[in-house]
Length: 466
Image 1 (tube, rainbow, N blue to C red):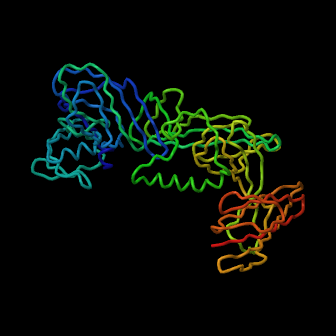
Image 2 (spheres, rainbow, N blue to C red; image 1 turned 60 degrees about the vertical axis):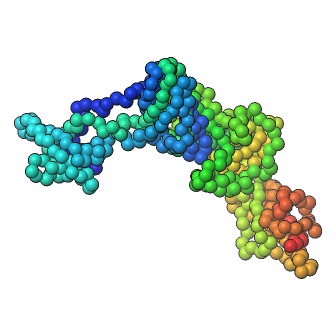
Image 3 (cartoon, one colour; image 1 turned 180 degrees about the horizontal axis):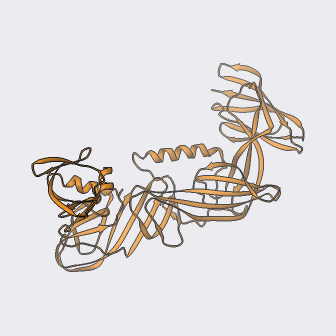
């Protein structure tokens, strides 16, 4: 309602009646456990001092996106009768909407003389604008440049200056202790990002990990003890979780072997925990970055590879993928549980300045895993795939004779890894010009050495059965 925001100053003459007990104490302790699926567990610990009897305890400053069905209230000596979440926040528009059918006062100031006139009006409607009944006339409140303000006698009982959870509780005897309010909320999330500076000559990478926190919950959380949980927490009907799993499937091409190392990372059930060292304030509508990983000399190398998913001929050669390979192991200088995220790779130019050369996404990666980050395509290293012959062995078996010509237009020799993926259920290599290896049930890989400014050919025959 733009006219209200520009033309009017809203004044309140009296506050609403207080509940039996208004809990205004600040948090004695505030804890956040944030998951990477737009979900967080919030725990407030606040002191109370109550006489025996029934009391309404108000908790201001809870998340505006609280999942009220998840609220847990713990206090020794108190029996909870009911709880209410008031999420209608105190705004000029909400005040006017709640005043429909009620009397308000409008005070206008004459721009020339400064004299004020006051009238009592009944609010008839706020749909598409404010319609008033002033005496015997109907008037539309307009933004006509005349200074005006609207005065309300009281704040409607369900309007709050901040999101508020109230608990009606019974105390059999006086209570002086801490109460704990815990709940799940949307609007808090985090993701990991990595900066990798690759030194090809030294064969190592400097890796920095950053946590990016985002608070869109409608509430500021001050001085919160915060920990982050990495893992796929199952939440019913959560589309964000589906997208996360989709991105992790996309990232499986990055990981070339699951890890078998144990790190010192703290665990929660089957998830890994990344605590933030100091209490932190996460303001509403704020994005905050916190460092969680720093490894200066991780062993790494650059390689070329290409993956083919069909046994067929291609009209044109394809560029080989450029990949930075590293091991997430203690021996290689890393060895930590890495949450999913984007790794941005930099290399130093002739002046020694780091320049961006590509990025790739990794899934949740256990310690000891092998990673191969795709940073781009090499237009001077290409692979030409050709199906030389198909032979029908039986009604359920066929042989496929393949050729892969690898060309290298670089001034130095290189090795290109050729991967043949998505084979049928039963498969075997019958012949090969270079010794290869099985990488999983439906794929093989060959490392093809190619001379500088030259080419090399890989040939193999695969038998597939069904």
